[in-house]
Image (spheres, rainbow, N blue to C red):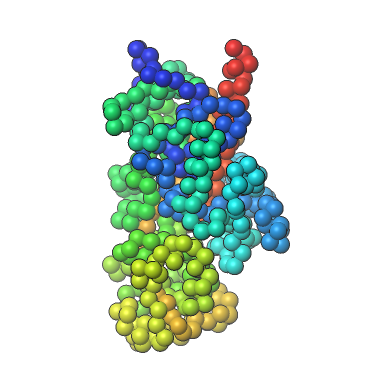
Length: 463
C-alpha cells in the first residue's frame, strides 16, 4: 500500500470519481454521486460486491423516519445523538455524531423512495443503548439482501462496478490525489480520477494491525471481510492524515461455533443468558453484543452457550441467519433442564442453579434487569464464541467526509466513509451502539458521494 507520484506515461484511463470498495458504503456513495449527475467507477477487490455488509444483519439505525412514525415511534436526531454519545461515554467528536444522527433519517428515506428499498423498523425487541426502536432493515433482516439490492440499484442506473480489482497504490501530486493503481487478473491498471472515495472499511482482516491496536481481541474469530486490510489508514498516514480511535472495534459475542453463523442478540435482549462450560453465567449480558466478544473469549476454551426458550426463538426467526442456524442444527431444543445439560455437555447441577437464579423482575447479581418473562421449556441453546466484525477507528473527516490532515487542513479531493473513516463508537469495544457500522457506511457514503459530485459540477463550471 504505497503513495506514488502520477505515472510519467499517463493513466490507462480516467474517471471523474473513483470509489474503492463495493460494500454498502461504496454503493451508496456511487448512487448518490450518480444521482447528482457525476460519473463514477466503483472498484472491488472481491469477486462480487459484498464487504462486511453482507455478513451483517443489514440493519441501519435512523431517527425520525416515516417508517418509525408509521409504527407509532417518536424519535429525533437529537435523541439518537445522545444515545450514541452515552454508549461511547462521550468519547466521540460531537460534530461527527450530530452529522450522522442528523442525516440518518433522510438517507433511509432517500434509499427507499429513489431505489425501492423496502425498509421497515424492528419493533418487537430493543437493542442495548437505543432508547427508541430505530433499526431499519429489509424483509430478510440480512445484510446480503441489502448489498444485493444496492448492487441492483447501481446496475439499473448504469453505474460501473469492476470486481477483482484491488487498489494497491495511490497517485498523489501536492495535496491532491490523482488516481490509483489497480491489481487485477491481467496485471495492473493505472486509473486517473478527479476525486477518490475510500470505502474500503478498516483493518480487521490485518492480523498485525489488530495485534498492534487491539491485542485483547487478536484471537477472536474474524467475521469481517478478508480485504479489510487497513489500506485507508496506511494511505492516510502516508499523506499526513489524522487518525482517531484506532483501538475501537465492533465485536460480537454470539457467533455460533463452529458453524460461524451470527445469532441475533434478540435472544439475549428478550431474556436469554450466556453460560460458560461450567454452566455458570459470567457477566451482565444486557451491556451489548460488542463487549460480549471480550467477555466470551475470557471464558474456558473461549466458548459460551447462549440459552433462551421457544418464545424467544419465535422472535429471532425474523432473521434469516437464525433460520439458517436452526436448519443446520446449531440450535439445540429440549423439554427439560436435564436434557439441556445432556445435549450441551454442561454440568446439570450448575445449569439448574444458574437458571433458577434468574430473577423474574429486577436486577440480578451482575446488575442486569430482567423484565418478567422467565425462561421456560422448551429450552433452546447454541454454542457460541467471540468474533471481531470490523474496526471502528480510522481517518478523521470533516462535514463533507473529506480526509483531515493532522495540521488542520483537508486533503481536498480525498474522501473517506464507513470503516475507512473514524466511527462513533468511542475508543474501544464498549462504545459500539448497535448499527453504528452501517450508520457510518450509509450516511458518510451519501455525504461523500454528494460532496464529490458537487466538486465535479464546480470544476465543470470553471472549465
